[in-house]
Every structure is written in C-alpha cells, then in structure tokens.
Amino acid sequence: MGRGNFCPCGEFTDQWYIDYDAYEWDDDEHEEYEIDYELLNGDVDILMDEICKRFPSFYREEKQMNHYWGQRQVLANKFFVIGTADNEWSEAVFIQMRDDIWPCEQENLAIRHFERYCNGIREIMLDLFGTIYLRNGPWMSSKLMKGVS
Image 1 (spheres, rainbow, N blue to C red):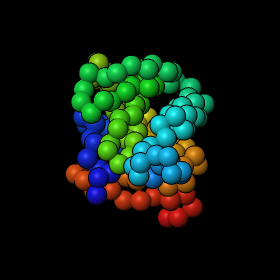
Image 2: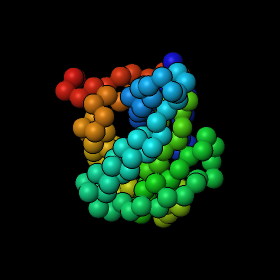
Image 3: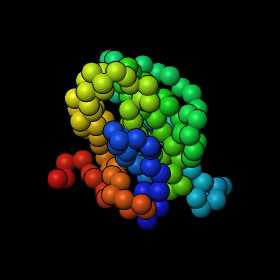
Image 4: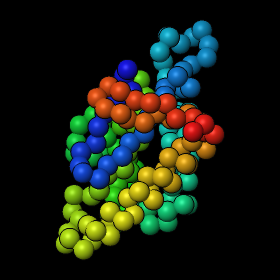
C-alpha cells in the first residue's frame, strides 16, 4: 500500500514506481524516514539520460506541470511527455500522451510508438534500479524485479 496513489491523466499513460527504501539515510544523524533526495535525483537524471539515448526523439524539458501532486515534466517529444512525481513512499515515473496531439493521423502514429516506449522505459528502470513497482489500481502495485518473470 502507498505506492499506487499517483495516477497521470489521459488514455495513453503508463507509470512505474521507484521505492524510497533504497534512498533512506543510513546513519544515526537522520530521522527514520528521511530520504537522500540528492542521490535519488541523481539516479533519476541517469534514468532520463538513458531514455534519451534509447529514444533520441526525447529531449529534456524540465518544468513543473500544471497538474497536481507536484508533477515534473522532464522529457518530451512530439507525442509524449515523461515525468516524475512524489508518491509518498515512492517516486512515480510516468509517460503520457501530450494534450496537443492533433490531427488524428498524428495521434495514430503516437499510439504505434507507445508500447515500444513503455517497454523500453521499464527495461531501463530495471537495469538501473533492479526492482520497480507497477500500478495495478488505486493504492495497489506489484513488484517487478530484474531477471524474474
């Protein structure tokens, strides 16, 4: 519980969660649930660099999105945005179709790329983090580990 509460809007969206447990402070100076955001943000930057290497159409476009939950749009291309959001106990990474995809021919082209982007992002995340979580529904997620089907 607690990993599945963030949900991006739109028909063509997908999301994954990076558990904060790997980023908790490991000394007595910090309180129990303090997160090392510097390390987390560095790893998220590496993730975004790897996505741009695999999918060169994406470019960095760091900006706060006009949605809720503190969403940050980090990457964009002609059809999709990729971003992050704080998810209480995890960092949500999401992809969603841009709102301004028209006419319908471009939307169909975007849809053809969607599954390839999602599979690639999931592979990159598993390579970097070893374990990620997939949203199953409100407040529900399942664990996905590298090398385990």
